[in-house]
Amino acid sequence: MTTVLKIGGSLITDKSDSHTIDERMLDRVAAAIAGADPDAIVLVHGGGSFGHPVAAAHGITDRDIVCDPRAINAVVAAMTTLHETVLEVLTDAGVPAVSVPPRAIYRKRTDGTLEGSTETIAEILAAGFIPVLHGDVVVHDAAGFSVASGDGIALHLAGALEADRIGLCTGVAGVLDRDGKVIDRIERFGEVADAIDDPEGTDVTGGMARKVQTLLEMSTPATIFGIEQLDTFLAGNRPGTTVSRA
Ligand code: IP8
Image (cartoon, rainbow, N blue to C red; front, side):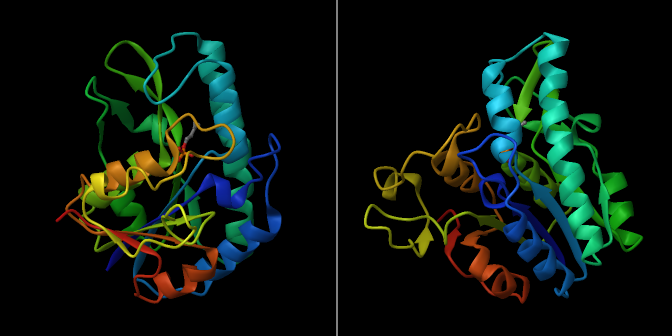
């Protein structure tokens, strides 16, 4: 059984403060993964207060293309700083985590979809390791670089690896309605479009609304949940919000 788990950047960083890791939360994530028992897990983490503010400062989003190598490398540097800490905390917790840099395998087509070979990732899994990827800047068909969100990468991986489960652990307990209640199941974006709040802090990839829209394109149902439900998800359940097109 293959599980793709996206760890939200807003969960493991403090989005109100640039370049700040939420160490307590990252420790909790690492402990949950270390204690989990699925055969194969692929992890993807978001950019939080590292990738997003730097990308925004340089005018790079998942819809804008940038050609300035200094801008591209600034985002890479910010994401690498976060990624190295994530890897360190995971391995310290006993997780056999190994880094796979997305920009080395992915390119973005003009329609915004990602293309990349996941053979190496399958081999890393088969060797008993947990590949760890992250939201990144990737080369774009329009001859520049653009942001590839961790969600987009997680979804591509779930399809390419024929994953059985895909989970998104976020800073909230699921997709919340205007009263702050977790929406149990979403089958069409129109059902919830008015209820979903804008993201807090800088976000160059669209926040929860875009997350739900992207997940609705998948044939595999996805689960969005918070840190309190991470153990439950890893034990094979579907806490929080299930997003599954009708
Ligand atoms: O936080 C964005 O990834 P996300 C990564 O998963 C960058 O949307 C480079 C801002």
